[in-house]
Every structure is written in C-alpha cells, then in structure tokens.
Amino acid sequence: MSSGFKASHDLRSADCAERIGYAKIFKNCAKIIITATLTLAFISCGGGGSSSSSSANNNQNPPPPSAKSITPIYFGNKYVDLIPENPTKQKYDEKLFALINGNVYDADKNPIANVKVTILNQKEYGSALTNDQGFYIIPVEGGRKITIRLQKEGYLTIDRIIETKIQDFNIAQDITMLKLDEKATTIDLNSDQIQAHTSTTITDDRGSRSASIVFNGKTP
Image (cartoon, rainbow, N blue to C red; front, side):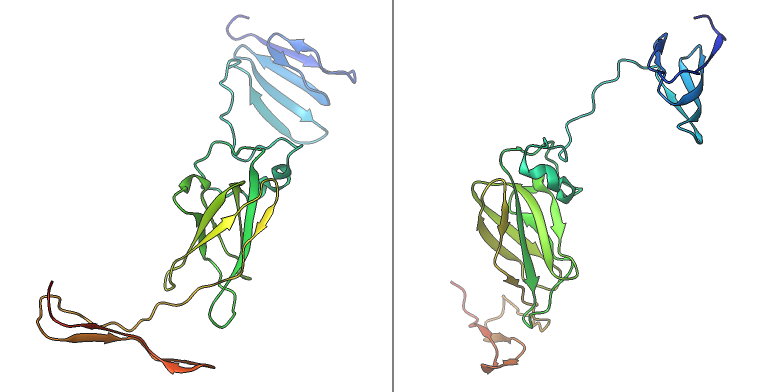
C-alpha cells in the first residue's frame, strides 16, 4: 500500500466479517475508509454516531492479569466488584477466594462510617471502608486464620482474628470501637517528682469511673 493511498469499501451485505489488508471490517458498518496507515474510520456504525480505531500496531502486548478477573465457575466471579481499588495483588487465587464482612459500632451502638479495614501485615489486599451503616466487606484468600485491622482517627485501633473458609462469606462478630480520651497530661520523665495522669470520668449503667497512671519519679 503506497503513501497517500485511500480506498473505500461500501458494505451492502449482512455479512461484513471479511478482511481488507490487515483491517477487520465489522458487522453493521455502512462504510469503512482505509488509509495508508491502516486507520479505520467507521461511518454510521450500528445505526448511529461515528467512531475511530487504529490497527497500526498488530503486535500489542497482552494486558497484565487483573485482580478483578475470576473464572465464572468460581464463587468469587460474582463479587469481583467488591475487590478494593488499591490492592497490589495481580490476581487472587480463584479456589481460595473468600469474603470477610461485619459491622462496626461505637460504645452507644451507633454505626461508625469510614473505618479503614485492612488485613494485618498483608497490604497486597488493599483496604475497605465501612459504609453509613458501619458495614464492611473485604475479599481475601481464605482457608486460614486472618487478622483484620480496623482504624479510624480518634478511635482505638482494633485487631480481630478470623478463621476463614474458602469460596464463602466469613461473617465477623460485631466490633465496638472506643474513642480515644482527649484529656492529656504532660509528664516530665526527667523529674524526680511524683506525677500522675487521670482520664476523663465516664458514667454508664455501671456507675462512674476513671483510670489513672502514676509516675513515681524514680528511674531503674
């Protein structure tokens, strides 16, 4: 094909699956113009609009494996949309795919949103966030004990061990996250004086109480 060559091919038959040079002509395309660079201009395809595509590079490398690709015969195929956007895993083991889900509440049984849920020491699984109902779900490779970590600013971090099954949901017990005490005391560790910190007093159906820690001013 020489430089500047342009050929047009009008498609009048129902079968448009023939090839012209290296360019495949697709069904329902009324007209295709082929230039020297093998750029296809699709005119009136599928009954509306126009689009363009290039086949200049016929030796493109295949796309890398996707973490969100699971064979339909496996449990995980229905739940690939639940895989976080930030995992570093290239692909999950289809036979071991499993889901961990549960709910997170505060001390008053109110759901906590936007709690970060991760798999302890396994950053390759990425992270999930609880929704407005405090619900979370995160895919893993099961068949073993897995520790989930729950974190949110202003709350104590919590770790929970889950014995997971494969090809199934693994429902964790409800988790209660406690707020960090905002009360603070500056302690001088070089002082020989007795110093103490006392927490904010809390009151519930068991009465009122607080916690204290005392520094006696003595070094070992």
